[in-house]
Amino acid sequence: MGVFASLVFPRARGRAVAVAAAAALLSTSACAPAGEEAAPPPGVAGSERELSFTVDGIEVFATLTLPADTSGPVPGALIVSGSGPTDRDGNADMRPDANTNLNFARLLADSGVASLRYDKLGSGETGLGGLDPEAPVDPDVFDAQMAAAYEALVGQSEVDPARTAVVGHSEGSLYALRAHTLVDAAPALVLAAPVGDRYLDVLDRQLTEQVRAVEAAGQLTETEAVTMLSDARAGRAAVRGGREVPDDLTGVVGTLYSPQNAGFLARMDRMDPVELAAELPEDTPVLVLWGEADAQVTGEEVDRLMTGLPRAERVDIPDADHIFRVYEDGPGATVLDAERPFAPQVAPALAEFVDTAW
Image (tube, rainbow, N blue to C red; front, side, top):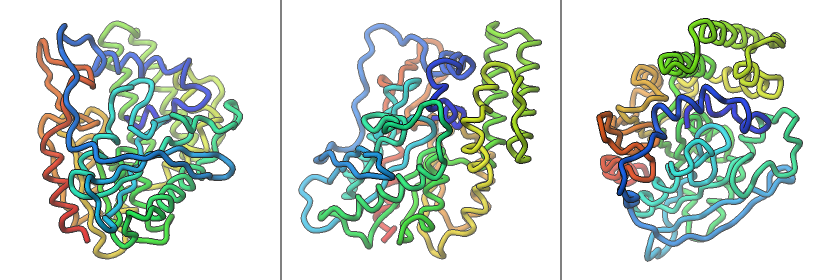
């Protein structure tokens, strides 16, 4: 999911994200040609079992995927979702058939790697875990969930704790880059469609693009668009400056920069991905994957991230979007996620990486 989607939880997710929803309709959710069928998933299914673990009194639900014919401990990978209320398979309300995490789990199983993926707070079977939906979410809960998920992974008898990786998709890359500070290990990293700029800068770019697209479609007037973007800049400045956010921001932006979201935004914005990358333990194996048709993360942002990862391998995937499904921009092209195949170039890049990571 795009970073903008991260602010759709938990209170505001159902009522105020008109710009994001309109942009999704413009770019990813149009009607597909009649008669299309679901694209076959990549890799292999392996074997799966459900499990759960508890974080601060909240039960978090997860799926462990094992390679077929596992004999002896195998490498293990923790898959960390992108932004917003995204479930263990990588799906959210706006993209219910993305299956990003599920597809990575299948490719990892095909390469002999076990994986664990989990329903982050606000999503899937985990839900809000009894938390007050009107109250701000403590940003630390996401660190705690990731750390507990990693411990659950390495606690499985089939997993070799000496050979582990963290696969972080989109916003999940910020958690992957800090994995060595959150768990007692220095896992290899796969950064898929990673964040490359400060959080609020990426958010501002995404919001600007979405507002302008909705304006171009005639769903916002020029005055409404200018007001919305002006309010967004005011909200960004307030959060980044540690000041109280103005209480008169326009609808969607007021929800985005609400008191419920301010703490999370400020926490994420303090993380410069380049600085996090430069602080990785020496010789950490890193694979960076980016789709050239990604509308959420730009090539320039990935270029910036790579300045902190001089020894990382980067693989740019042609015609792949933010969730690494094949994207074609032309009349009659299939646009529904379920009907577009997972980009075939991801599998060999991932297989080559895990062959040399440990």
